[in-house]
Image (cartoon, rainbow, N blue to C red):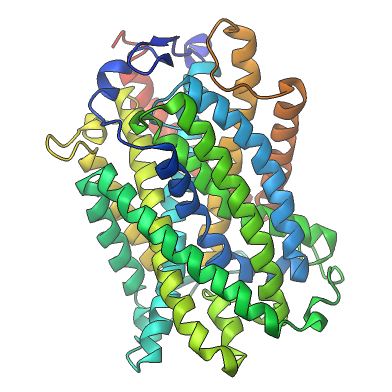
Length: 488
């Protein structure tokens, strides 16, 4: 049985995309339209990354972990991402299929590892959509409040929170705006990937303009005193000091899941061998530069301890009445920007479920493609319902850390997988190759596992429980129905 757990999917040339694809996926992949260009893929990555890190997670990471050195946290996270990004680019160009790290692990490390990664991608995409929806709700309610229409806290905040490892009731009922935006975005994803990509590109343009406005006008009111001390004195495990900077990097790693989501659309890219590396690495470079600049302005506008809100950018502007006019633009830009993040995450999760279902590790309903819209519509509906429930009930801090842990595990596997496939299938054509894989891949593994450990220390019980549930599903259903094992 142990050998069959690590059975890998054969990799062979796929003539319709002129590169390697997983054997047996040709029939399934043909049902998804190849319509996405390099520009749309880059915008897809920017759509997922520029938004959550700036508008939501940055404030919490600065206030609770890194202080003004959140700038360094973004740099550390981006270095780990760069290693993983190079590995993703090699895989995505060589194996242009839906499924992201799950599909790559199946081709290199075996079925049970692929399942483990696929299960953790649920943390990455599904929980990410829910996390960002909570942040979206904060900005949306703030905008409503500008016009005297704000919702009461009982209808705009999660009923549960986690304090010192214990779940407490907040007095609220449900985060209604968060549920509503997930439902609306799910409807767009249901209609089609091309429509989703077009909407995403338009939103990206809006939020980039708004962010540039924030930097240009906000920089004039930066108080350098707010940057001192740059790295606050350590106050406990993961709270300030260099340890806090690293813990902050683990948290803001959440902001980089976007370029990973690009790879889930490989099965719908027009020219994946050329366009996937451009989309992956292009979005990573651009977003890192923007994150560093925005983090500097944000912590310069307001003392970092006051940024622990679901809407930190708007909170910083509220402290400067002379920038009140800009706050309205930021709220609109944040609402638009976070909407695109939710869209990309929901698309990513439904495509991962699609790939797992095509391999028969999940029930067939997850791979049913709509005859008109050419989308995995049943998977989209299931993902939307689950994300809406999570967004309506759970707090942003817990969701964000779980997302980072799932993401880091997936990135670790991809970095290891490149080295494995270089040894087992050196003959495969690789339109894009990682430079110095003997150095880059191990550094990627070490960096991602190190950041993963920072959050695991506090949330070990949740991640182990999540893993246990995943393996229970695998042995109860997936192992017996596996298409690879059963010759299907």
